Length: 167
Image 1: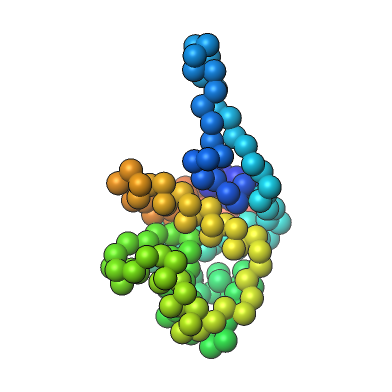
Image 2: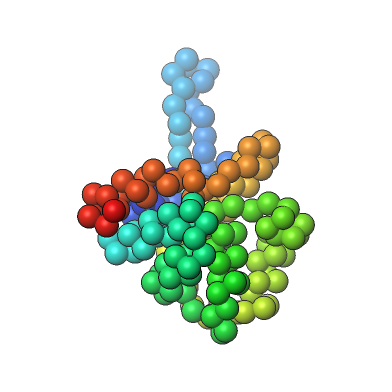
């Protein structure tokens, strides 16, 4: 999914287990079947580069760079509180754990952030990229394999930015 989002700029915003099939097992020719591409989004070159910068900032735990990338992505909230923006990005695009979400379910925690500083604008493609990150992490949690999406996608983001002359 990191390749789809950061390199191709075309991704399925609904990557849950119900949309992944294992076909041909009985015939001895197993194949992966991917279905339901109703939530496909595209990112322009510039949107991909902004998202690559956001991924690197999250992987480096660089709050100032995270906030800058969110602003470049078009994020607008009522107060533009940088602490809330940073936490929003961390949970939406990178990781979630008991400490980060203060022991709350991710949905309840995101609602709490929204209540503290309501998001007024974020382009749809970045919302769907957040959905991808959250769904993939949820799968990891289900099998006790928590991950940092930013750290996992970092090599892809670095490669893209290097190829574009930004690193």
